[in-house]
Image (cartoon, rainbow, N blue to C red; front, side):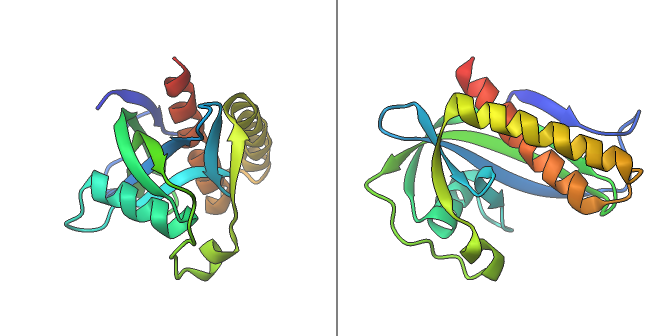
Length: 169
């Protein structure tokens, strides 16, 4: 899969980080102008042990937004290092098509149950992500890089942004 970006605040590749595989989906509406977001991010999540990327995409779409999806093609890979928890995320992005209408999400996670799905114009989504990233980077600098939550939020948005920009290329 094509490497789109490496998110790393270090000068070298960190050693001793555990690896977490993740999938993210760019799901377009029927007009191919709006993309489906789960809160502030593209739909997706961790790939479970003995699960393929394809199976994880299908499971995450149903869990988070109640969408049946079909993978059209891979978009690319983003690698992100979370320093405070010593984890290297390998994120594979996929372009997907929604099959039928949105159903009820199946997630059992209380935080995910509070998160809403929404369709956003792709250009507006890119602008929104860029603005949120700029704001988070300023916060991160202000707290002298000691806040994993800000790093997590920044990295997740950068992953979504990289995938959306690649789709538009």
